[in-house]
Length: 254
Image (cartoon, rainbow, N blue to C red; front, side, top):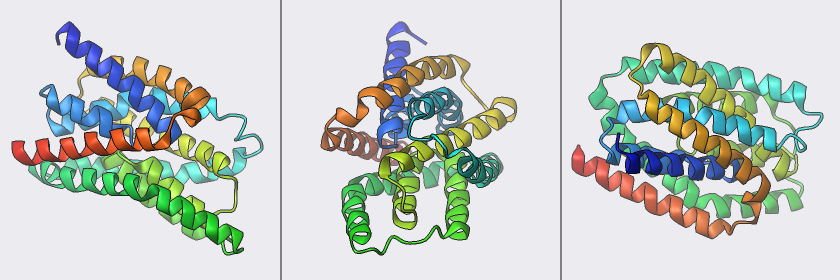
C-alpha cells in the first residue's frame, strides 16, 4: 500500500465514522474506496466491518448522555443484533463469491434509496407522533426487525443505521436523539460480532483495518460532538453520489 492510498483509507475512515454516528451509511464511503484501490468485494467488506467497529463504539460512547437509564433495554436489543450478525457472516462466508458480487450492487442501491427517502420517513414519523399514532412498544416486532437488520449488517453493513432509525422511529415513542444513541450501540454490536468472526475465518487486510480503526474512532467522536450541526442535505448528497459511483463501478467491473 502506497502512502497516498493509506491516507485515502484513513480519511475515508474518519468520514465514515462521522457519518455512521450522525446518520449511518458510512460504509457507502469506505467500501467503494477499498474496491477502487483494488480489494475484492469480500475482503473490502470484512476489513471494513472490523475497521469501522471501533468507530461505532466511539460514536456510542459519544451518545452516552442520551443512553442514561437505557442499559437494560439496550442489552435486550443487543441480543438479536448479535445473533443476526452471526447469521449474516455465515451467509457472506458460505455463499459463492460471485453471489456476493452480484448482490452487492443491489444492497448498495437499497442503501442509497434509504438515504434518499430518510427525510420523508422522518416527516411521516413526526406526523404520526403528532396524531398520537406512534403508540406502544411493540416489543416483539421491534426485536424481530432488529434481528433482520443484524443479518443485513453482518452480511453488508451499509445503511443498517438508517434501517434501524426508520423502523424504531415508527414503532417506538422515544425522542429521536435517544433512538440515535440506541442505533449507535446496536451498530457497534453488529460490527464487533461480525468483525470477530471475520478476523478468524475470512480474508482480511490488516493494514486497512488499522487505518480504518484509527480514522473511524476519531470520526465517531466528531460525529457525536459536531455532527448534528452539519447540514444533513450535504451529508446525504455525498453518500448518494458515492453510493451511485460504487454501483456503477461494481456493475462495470462485474
